[in-house]
Amino acid sequence: MADESFGHPRLAALYDPLDPDRGDLDAYVRIAAEFGARRVLDIGCGTGVFALRLADRGIEVVAVDPAGASVDVARAKPGADRVRWIRGDATDLPPLTVDLATMTANVAQAVVDPKDWRETLRGAYAALRPGGRLVFETRNPARRAWEEWNRETSYAVTEVPGTGRVESWVELLDVTGPLVTFRWTYVFTADGQVLTSDSTLRFRERGEVEAELAAEGYTLDDVRDAPDRPGREFVFVARRPR
Image 1: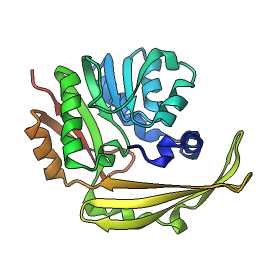
Image 2 (image 1 turned 90 degrees about the vertical axis):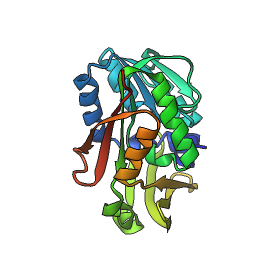
Image 3 (image 1 turned 120 degrees about the horizontal axis):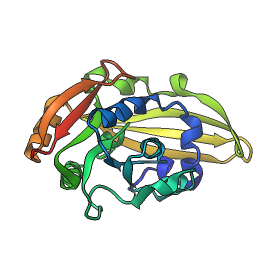
Image 4 (image 1 turned 180 degrees about the vertical axis):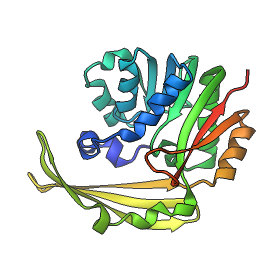
């Protein structure tokens, strides 16, 4: 199930205006070039920012996301006809073969159920050609990023074209083991509507992820630092053996 921030049409339309700087995707664009990827599977594509960046470079992209409202936003963007959009997840894919599969931003951590996570890894593996790679990021639990998730540090007011002023902030709700739950609140000042979206992320230890990849048949090529969050995230580069 998609969180309200991705599945609610009014909130999905806010995603890009509230987070316009997607410099975190630069590293993934470079990775696609590094591996010479010509066909990419973008798992958890959201509003399609990364998929469209790749398509602009002549790369064939299949983009999948369970949130229909986010996929609708992506499909309405210029150049969207160059991407194959699918509403679903990595277990809902048609037969395809790609050079690279990606899960950017919080996508990997948003798959919180261990069974769903294994099936996601299997779905990506099935889509990869022999020698193809899966690349994704996850926050380092030791850095306890959730301790900064509060109204005081996150409150913002954004003027959104066609919508007006929107207030937004995040609040931590619960930490139970590796699961961290938080709530985003959005206030539309033009009409007074208040919408909330609860999310849960799973903070996996590096060794846990390495063991899970090995169990699904991957070879781990590298664990990199995230350029936009140095020392705070792991970027896993796993390969389907030839």
